[in-house]
Amino acid sequence: MTPNQTAALIVTILLLGWLVLMARDIRRFDGGMFVYFLYMAVRLYAGVCFRLRTNRRCPFPASGPAIIVANHRSPLDPMFLSYNIHVNEDPQGIFRVIRFLMVDTYYDIHPFVSKICRSMNVIPVSRSGKDMGPIKQAVRALKDGNLIGIFPEAGINLGKSLLPADPGVGWLALTAKCPVYPVFIHNAPVGHTMVQPFFNFQPVRMSYGEPMTFEKYYSQKKNFELSAEVTLEIMNEVGRLGGEDMTGYRCLEPGEERHTS
Image (cartoon, rainbow, N blue to C red; front, side, top):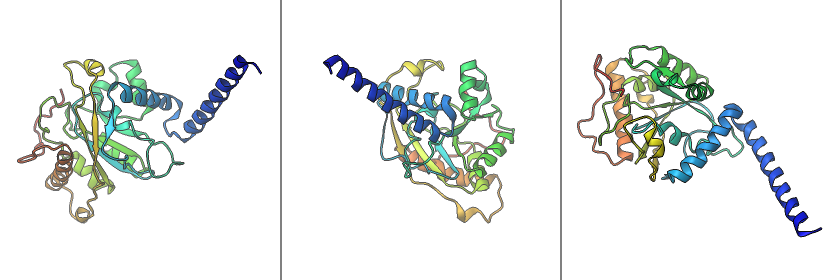
């Protein structure tokens, strides 16, 4: 066999091996082929352009419902949270897709964005935050064993401190009775348009916290005060992961304008 034939054989074997691995992974991916290729693009883009690093192995569960809560400084935050969804304690388990709650204005902003949102089963939420339909949809998704991703600051935060949180995340945690996984995204790229952050390449780091459960509240009647108390516990942990000063931190009051810029 000539050197060229040997090289061609090696390349062919490597290519076939890659195709076999890809076929295996697609079957393990609960979002289908489009989401699989989207995920692979995210791994490459976030890993190379933002040098994404984490403080530990991704703790998101291999099965069962969970709520993932994070700060929100960039339109790329859902991408960063999805970066390690293949990592769990069961190497043969399903690659899990996070169903994010997202302001409905962006859901149909562009046909390709709409395709991504629908493929990932994003739950659109109105800017007013008064429609309980999306929250009830999130409850049903959790009872079906899905992962739900929420940014309780109710909008992209370009400031230094965490914005007051929507207490709906506390209500959701109490209603679904599932664990909450706090995450802080450090140094996420920002910009004055939705496109600019995609080209602000800078190192990004994520800090995963321990899962939080709220069994001690399950027997109590759910109301605004209890939902706000649970939300504050969650956001204080998110802030702690980010080294934030949470002194005086609060939730949005009923009827208070949401910061959805």
